[in-house]
Image 1 (cartoon, rainbow, N blue to C red):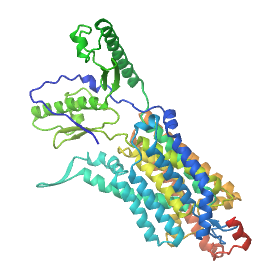
Image 2 (image 1 turned 60 degrees about the vertical axis):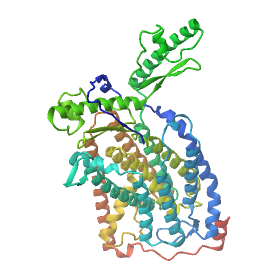
Image 3 (image 1 turned 30 degrees about the vertical axis):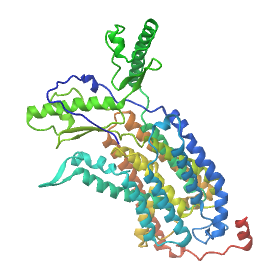
Image 4 (image 1 turned 90 degrees about the vertical axis):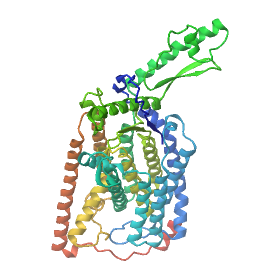
Length: 575
């Protein structure tokens, strides 16, 4: 982590140009197609590994006795099916992620790799699901394993800042003091962290179990997860900084300055039969009246061995200039008023700067009003590449598994797979809120709405019926669609359609926030209406089902003992 902190010169005067505040929101990422091209290797590796390794995992599952046998109620598949599919998906994901650590080229090489905490969380979730597949773990142990995975995310602050985005409008910035007793003080940032950690735990528990609940038909969860991954990938590409005309104009200006200097270097070399030792030699010899200044954020790099000059973008230098300028204005404000400004916008309102400074894209400006300290930390957009990488790996892995899992399935995901897929979807959604952008988290949740809606229905249905929340039943959305539409494939495609509708809605919502002036409160209102409708639908459906069960108890489904497979079915399974 690199921190740029301006050093004040009390006797100095402000020589900086307030053009620094004009528009320094530089974009350093390539357009969406370049990003996709850079990360397509991850998709290919995850797809091919999962596709090819699944048959071997299936044979291992059969040998280990990890078999899902049919019953007369919920499990209506005609013969026993292996349930270690999550292992194949996990291996595809891990090998693809390992590839990203070893080799990445193009635009992707400029981004930070996937945080190791996410990989540790994947291992914890995988172990939890695998243990349940093999030994039928107690629900409390499964919850403990999921909380371990959530703790891994909290270590890297993945999702912690979601709480800041929600609470900051009401409580103030993270550096504001809320409790002060002598030398002991509690900042908003401390509250944000602990509430954010709790949010991570809720998201992980909810996402893992929501994915587990909809894994009830061949190819359902793997296909829905693929759709969710596509929607989240589209949002991640929208969030990734795109090339813009302002940046291109500065780049062209920098190249023109370098070209002007290069022409004088060539002239110097021709007339003096030597190369200048440095660029200042051109000024001393009269070839340039003064060394031209490149635009803010760019520097001239000179190779005295080859006599070549080039223009390079230097975000650190641009951030340092803006930080120094703002710090001087903060000090000037204190000298005039006797106290530090409460926030940077106060300097604008008081006329000390003309506009709120716009920092280079990877250097968010931070201000501590208690110390009057301005800093710029290299951390913004650090997860932009990691989000895209994880989306591509997840999409490749589930598409590689889907041919084996689609009806008629030869292998099931099992708890190891369903918990893992739910966990990764939640991780990507939380990563969208790394800078407190809760509106993007809401957009991600809308993309993930099918599992959320089914879980909401299940919770309300079981609460009204007075049964345990962990009790299984055959009243999930996919079960009802299978009975209504008369087949597994029809029901699965119907749920796919619902997933695509929510994915499109989530992407459009994210685009409206990023590309227009639609305010965040409007996003909250839209999300509230959507989930309000879902909740009301859940209550109505649950009440109707409960009333039907009470009035006609003989029609209520009951789980029957597992039906043993025939010898031929067992032989087919092992084949």
